[in-house]
Image (cartoon, helix red, strand yellow):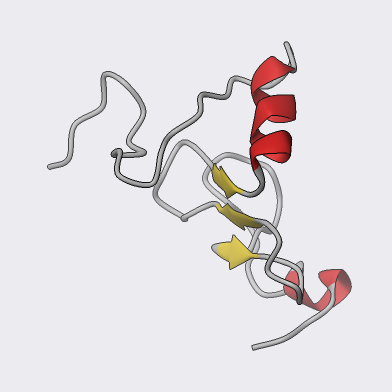
Amino acid sequence: MEAGPEQALTWRTGHMRGEGALPDLFFPADHSWLVSALWDDSWTNIGGTAALISALHGNPLVNARPVGPDEDALPPGLTRD
């Protein structure tokens, strides 16, 4: 499904993290990056270029860690039930 930001923000409200309405997965038309914020996760996955990930990892306001394509993205200390 394709939508603009205004439409996507109306699809779901009351996200468990209190951040407002977020689609589970969103990305631009060129697929140059993506954000996955699943309804039952307490974290957000971001995929993109090495430069984007490096910038996020280097930002002191963002609690980010790089994860390779063959690594589990589950945050340290959490287990799959």
